[in-house]
Image (cartoon, rainbow, N blue to C red; front, top):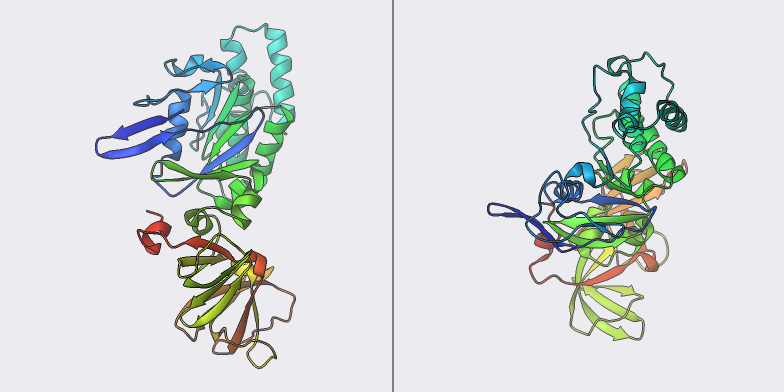
Length: 361
C-alpha cells in the first residue's frame, strides 16, 4: 500500500497501491523503466522501499527478509543450481524445510508430473533445452509451496515459439495448484492471453487496472489505449452534444460518436482500434466524406493491415480479416473509411498535449 521507491533524482515507484485477489493471475505491463520490476523486487524483499506497507494475505511482511515472506520468485535468467540434477533443483525447497525424505520425493514427483517435465533423475540443467530449464525453475519455485508467485519476465530469454507454448503451461500450472501470481512482462500479447487482470504502469504509477477485454475495448485512459495494442487517435472539437451522442468536427469533417459526457466546444481525442476501421472503394455508394489514399498494404497472415493518408492530412490504420479477396488491392488506390460506432472512444484532450500523454518514455 502506497509503496514509494526512489533512486537519487528518479522516482521508480510513486505511492503505488495494488490489491491482488486470492488465486488471481495478474500481469504488470508498461514501458521500459516504468517501475514494474522494481515493484516486484519490493514485494519480494529483494529491494527495500522508501515508504509504504506490503501485506501478503493478512500478514504484514514490510520489514521481513525474502526467505520469511513465503514467496516463489522466478527470474528471466534461468537460475538453476548447475551442480544439482533437475530433480534435486525442484526438491531444493522441501529439503531446506526439512521435510520427510519420502514425502518430499513424492511431492517433487507430483510437481514434475504436473509441469509435464520429461526428465530423468540424473538429468542436469545443462542437458535440458531452454524451455525445459525454465519449466524446471518454475517447478522449483512451486515446490517451495509459496503463498504468492512472483514472475519477473519468466519467458523473456526463450525463443518465440517456446514462449508461446510455455505461457499457457505457466498459467495452467498456477491455476491447477490454486496459486496467486504476479507476472511482470513487456510482452502485451503474453499478458493479455494468460491474465485475469492487467495492471498498466507508466513513470512509477499505476495508470489503469482491469481485465484484458476491458482495457483493450474500453480503456479509461488514453495511455492505455495507445500502449495496449494499436489505435488511431483523431483530435477534434465537439460540435453537437445530445443525450448519449456527440458529433465531433475533425478539420471540417464530421464524426458521429455514440457517447455522452462532453460539452459543445470541448476539445477531444477519439481513439479507434484498426479492426474497427472498415475500408471500401471510394466509388461505392454512401457517405464518402472520410476518404483517402492507400499508402501501405501488408498481409499479416490472418489479417490485412492497410495504412491510409486521409485527404485532410491525417493518417489512419485499418486491419481487416484476410478472406482471400481483400477489398483494397493496390497502393495509391482511393478508399472510403467507415467506423464501427461502438469502437469510437472519446477522451478529453490532454492538457499537456497528445504527444506527451501517449509517450512511452
